Image 1 (cartoon, helix red, strand yellow):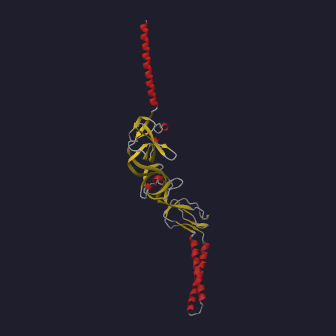
Image 2: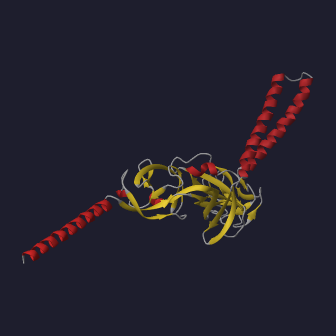
Length: 351
């Protein structure tokens, strides 16, 4: 009986010792796992980056003018064929000018009389039959009348509105007999055989856009890509939007291209075969900088980076990350400098 009790006691001690040792090992393993974060990562390597950007733009007539009168008056003649082409120099609108014409005739008559007097006085001056002072007074009077005639002709020209270029007349806003002033919009005329495309690009791309750059664009309701060539830029960055305004000449012809229409502009600014691209979720934005967390020798290191072109799911790293670095993409908020990390998954394929 004593022998059985002794054997049972030894068995209990052995079982307790094994169980206790196993529990201690499990506790150590759990503590080890607890101190080492499980994260996902991305292996940075050189990739092809095509620098394409898409911005919004507007179509404009190559030339467009709001027709207005230089002086007030009553309309006596209208040649504004809505939606029709008119030639440069065509008379579009004529204001009442009978009073100006009458004054012009009066001045021309006075000029003719004074010129005859001047002619007689010229002969008398040669024969010393008139003083030099009298002759000079008549000569001055002739020139004064000529100047008044020029002023009168200028006023008469202001009663006529001519087409400034070959273009299409828009909708007219007046009728015969209307009283107009310099602030009255009579109609518009625009050149429609050529169009301009205006758009703005972010400041960081301003050095890439030069005259001669070819661009593609589409318009609402038509997915056909149209062609345009950059002809000029504003020359300075807008202080409010930090954008550069660009103007291009449209080379394509289509009935869907209408001045004032919205367009989506696509620009190709070259390519980089050795760009370092990482997932956008790996970026930790700061107040002034951007950081990423890179794993080295099983430890997390926070690194300041300089970013470049941003795409839908990835972003270019210009400085801070090198090819072969493993960038952590998950659990970023819980990692500190020098923290131990282990990876549950590391992506190596291109984004």
